[in-house]
Image (cartoon, rainbow, N blue to C red; front, side, top):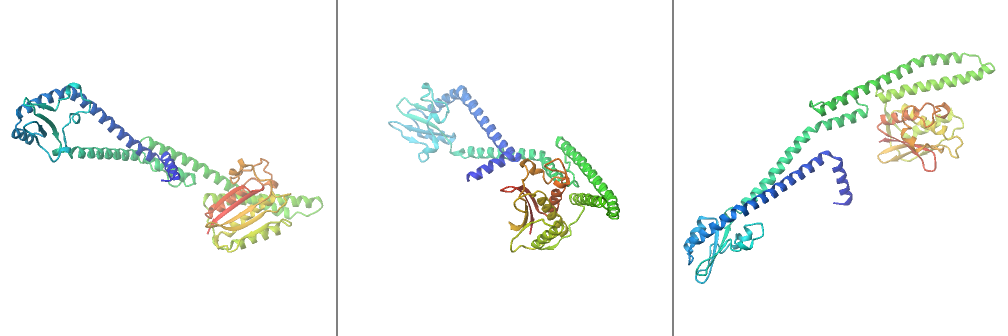
Length: 442
């Protein structure tokens, strides 16, 4: 595994509660097994020293006496057939082994019987010497049950792993509501309040899911109330603004009245534009307005917006950069024109006195087409960049129309981009100025 893979695996382990529980259960099973085996070994070792050794010494004496002196091979062979022991006789008259072909499988040395170091008085624990000088060595024949401890060991390990898996499955089932709560929180974060979090149990996690549902319902209610209020106010303002514009148009231009009439018409036009922006942003933000998509040439759309801007703002210069081979996109032309017009108006407003005009660049980028608008003004403080596309946010608190209005333009552009499935990015460009990019998928 590469170093990057190891780092990624460690990050996933620290982040995933599920895998940390798996590791915890495995370590717990191994620790419990080790503690149990250590304790049993010490307990059995103590029992061997205190009780089993004297019994073994007496039994070995009796078996050696049964073999006799000189040793009888027939009696020794009968003993090995009756008991799981091995016998080896060596001496001047008799030299015999009960298992000559499998000597490695039998344990003749005394330290194979005991885990503790031998005491000086136990040198002859499994060895006896007859009166006629023969030596008899006894051992434990493990051939009849040599595979049984191995089977028991594997069976024990399998049982421990099975118990660990069952414990993990039970804990995973206990924590399953956390997945539902996480999925519900992500839905609520995107504005989808239609599906509440499923409440599967009546415990603490069930209570948490119920509380999150109640919080989401309250937030949804407040958002809907805000949208309803904005839509109602916007609709109600359109009629008096229209009447005021009509009455202003009917005024006779006479001296100072003409100048005030023009100023009043500009103010009324800005109020009407603000109301339209409010209505459009609430429709897009609440999902009430469907896009009217049609095949659109992005280069032709950019030229159309720049030409319209030149007619409405005489003397306003915009540098247009169009890449070759741009694909046709399915776009809502009206809303895309609104997006580009807002971005260019914002760039022109902040490019006053700049050495270069704003730039509108349309080019392929990855699997999409990027519309990039850059000005050469002073830019925006870094701490304000994440908030530029929020509704009613402005880096300065003056909120004057000449310096950017009330902060709905970039917010509306972000909504249009997201409605098309695109990405909206804002950042300071290298060399100064603000750069806004809208990346639309092909």
